[in-house]
Image: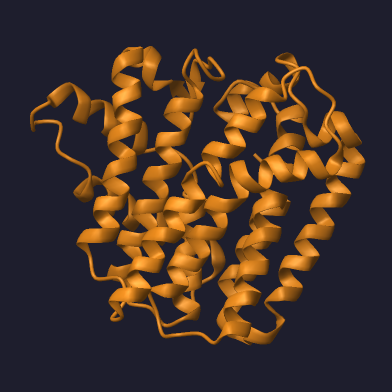
Length: 296
C-alpha cells in the first residue's frame, strides 16, 4: 500500500484531470461563463471532500470511475458555495485559493451564474452516471447531496452564519451552524463514496456517518484556529476575516487552547467510529489525522 502522501498526491492529480474533463470547455458557448466555471474549480484547494469520497469508496471496494462522478458532484457543490460566499452580498471577499475571487476576476453577475451552473452540473453528474447497480439507491444518493446542499444543510448553515454577525452564540448554537454549513457536505462525500461500492450493513453505515459528523465539525474548528494564527499568504484567503466581521468562531467563543482540545476530542471520536473496519479504514483514519493535525 502506498504511503499516505503518495496516495493523496496521486488522487489529487488524477482527480484534477477528472474535473478538467467533466467541466464544459471554455471554447463552448457561452465561453465567458464556462471559462469562469473552470477558473473557480480547477487548480485550487486540497480536494479534501473528494479524498474522503475515495477513501470511503476504497473501504467499500467501489469502482474508481463511479467514485469519480460522485466526488466531482460534491466538489462542484463546494466550489459553487465558495463563489457565492465570496460575493459582496455575502462575505465580500477578494481572495480565494491564492487568487482573486470569481466576482473580482470576472464580475458579480458572472459569479452568480457560475455558482448556479456548478450546482446544476453536480446533479447532472449524479443523474448521468451509474453510481450504484440499484436505481433506488442512486436516487437516495441524489437526495443525500440535495439535502446536504440545501436549506437543511450548507445553504441553511450560511443563512445562520449571516444572521449571527455581531451576536454571541452558545457552543451548541455554533455547532449547529457549522454542522449545517460545513459538516453536511463532508458527511455527504463520505457516504456517497461508500454508496458507490459494495453494500454495507446499517451498523457500518452508521459508523461511517458518525465519522463524517465528527470529522466535519473538527474541520471547521481547525479552520477557525488556523484563521486566527496564520497569515493571508499562507492560507490563500483573507486571514482573520470572520473576527474582523464580528462573526462568532470557536476561537472567539472558547479561546485557542480550548478550541484545539475540542478538535482533538472530535478527532478521537472519529477514529473510534472506524474501529470496527480494521485496515480497510486506514485511509479514512489518515485523512482524519490530516484534517485535524494539518498545518499550512
